[in-house]
Image (cartoon, rainbow, N blue to C red; front, side, top):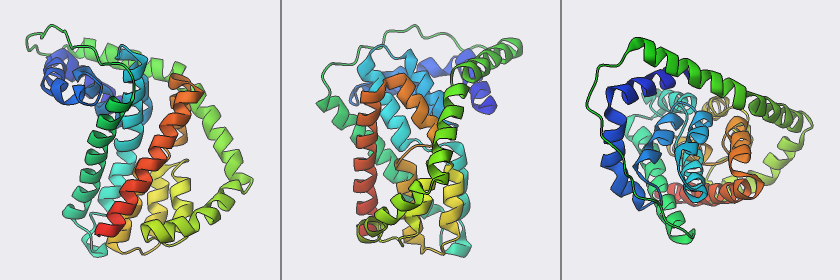
Amino acid sequence: LVAFYLLLGILEDFGYLPRLAVLLDRTLHRMGLHGWAIVPNILGMGCNVPAILATRVLESRRERFIAATLVSIAVPCASLQAMVWALVGDPARGGGMRFVLIIYGALFAAWLAIGRILNLLLPGRSPELLMEIPPYRLPSARAVAKKTWMRLKGFVVEALPVVMLGVLAVNLFYSSGAMDRMARLAGPIMTGAFGLPKEAAVAVLLGFLRKDMAMGLLGAMNLEIGQLVVASTLLAMSFPCVATFAVLWRELGLRDMLLSTGIMLASAFAVGAALNALL
């Protein structure tokens, strides 16, 4: 969070983010958003929690729903990305750069397709982007540090209590054995639709607690590289970690959170099954 808030502050004060928003405005309009929605997506590559909170900069509830859903489905956090590079990119496992790019390509295609579909199905329209393009300036270290501190403080005050309650609830759910029973029920789907062993269901469900830990479990299963690509993509697109889930609930409300979750599960199933058929 410190690194991404710091980088965001530098890009803002340097004057680049408004230019990036203008450059991507036409593409994002086709997804029901405007160019400034790129900021939550950039933040999501560090952590999805501040990315969901950052959707507050968007004007309408419709835009916030689309942006939050896209971030939670198709923007992997930094810890998951590190494990993907470590496992899928490992030549000793038969992996390499091209398999990592398959995962990123699938997520990017899902990001574009889901955004386009939501824009067509949800009533309303995205507003035009009207903003002043500032000149390039050398950022002030003091201003960037103050901005980073204010954002970190806001995260701790607003998001951390919700995150901690969510972590407590899911740990109680896991210790009760309910998650193991769900994994056993999901086992046949893992084998039939995704070509994965039944044990992979445990790892995918554990991604609800920690996605990097879930990737570690997948790495210990000695999967073939094609199976690891499918499992990694499925893990990235399925349930977000409990912290993101809790913030989604807070920002969108229960009804929209459940709708976003349904879209998430349908998208993960479709992409995972398609990759299983292709690899």
